[in-house]
Length: 203
Image (cartoon, rainbow, N blue to C red):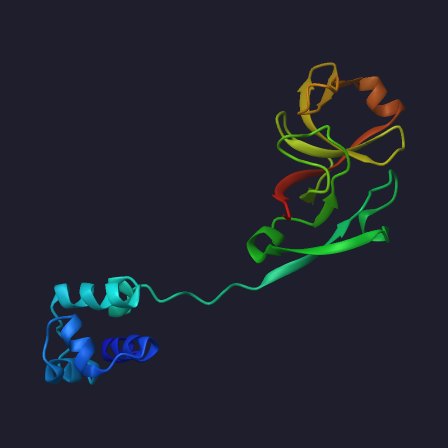
């Protein structure tokens, strides 16, 4: 699209005549005609700024410098209501919704969504929120992880590693940290099944 076509599109969208539009940017009707038909292409910057202001667009848009790139397609993942210990994510049938993640993110691993139940991670993560989780069996101190303990449903906690074991820490100070020695991690067992990478909240 040429500069002239962009100017004409703005004028048409606002339903303003050539005469009135020319008055608004302080040029003659003939000059505006030449702008719109690309007879004059070296338009003064103050006129470009005036047109952009009237059309509520950027001067760069008028000049064709900030063309909006095509929207990237996303990747749809399942949102689960619960994750039971020992059941592969792919085999879980408790799908309650779907979410979309970017293709760039999807290329970094396998992902699922999980709806959070309870208040142990407030105020950052609340009951009913959905977290986007990258499937992985390990994580670093400070990461928010999804883990299974004692063969029960998965829990969302912040991970802290130390030499003799790990802690799973709630954001809510009402909940005590869950401490596990290296032997307890094996015996119970305690398994990390993913790392939280995004939060999705609906209002």
